Image (cartoon, rainbow over all chains, first blue to last red; front, side):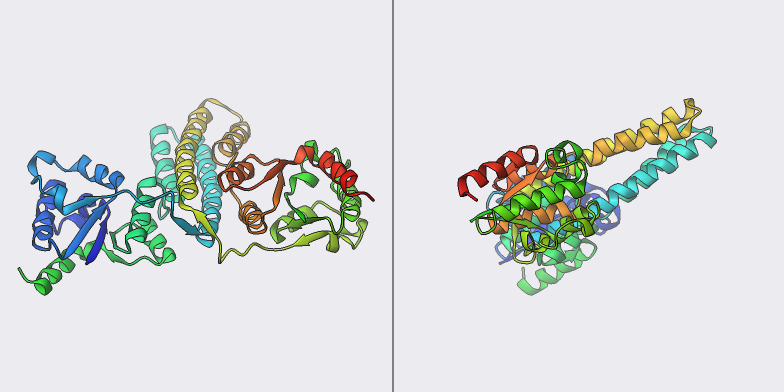
Length: 195
Length: 195
């Protein structure tokens, strides 16, 4: 049985989603058509946190109740699982560098603020640069981490377009596919498995 | 055999160090006297990163070469060890909260900067508040993490006054003693073991 663990990006990230539909709801309807045809052959999992994130964008009344059957919700077994120490070691080093960089970003904003009349312009720039320094490419939410643990536990394939998630997948020895190619993969699977 | 893993604080943090000596070098000489008397009964370990930090403050020419014998340098076996997933989960949640707080600290500094003529005053306050938000109580260096792993590997007792380290010790089920009470503990051990 092939198992996928899905990230939000398939339904939410516009660049990735557009292959499935113009809105998150349309993308979900399209995805469920594929999932139905692959039922019994391929399983699709999401962690509860990611499911909640996805359904924040999807109009539940507009999708089939079969979503409950085709998208399996499962939390990872966080209390029995273990992470290689060197992965945590690298995480701590990465965070330390980001924290230092974040302070430099903040100091620059303060100095620029003195010369710039429009404070909102400075604040917006600060937010952009701070986000880039502290969060871009970092596993920075428990939802992302749950997704990784769930894939590890199930020996499943992560479907994501998130750099932070894919970096961890590599470190943890987890299979993954680029969310941008997921539709083609599903079509190929349908061809293989018939129906 | 009782094993301790030492943090820098014993020799560097003035509040902790003062029981051993007025300077890091004096504190180290005093400590080595205790270590010598406990040789064969108690082992004192440091990870290489922590050793380097300590020796940055200690004048090596002023301490006995026996330091090599009494303070055992050992890196943790970072490639074989594992960390419970829930500890990493909590770390990621903690970091996320700190990152959000750091941005608020930075935004406040920018807004205050407009009203305050002395930019250095604002920058200094920013650094203080940012440090408190992002780093205080967090395991934020690989040296700290190595110390924890080493204690876990050796089933040793951590000697530290660092909140971040002691928090992890508790989560990881590692024994620890407060560095502020370390001198009394050593004296008690000397009483027990004679000499």
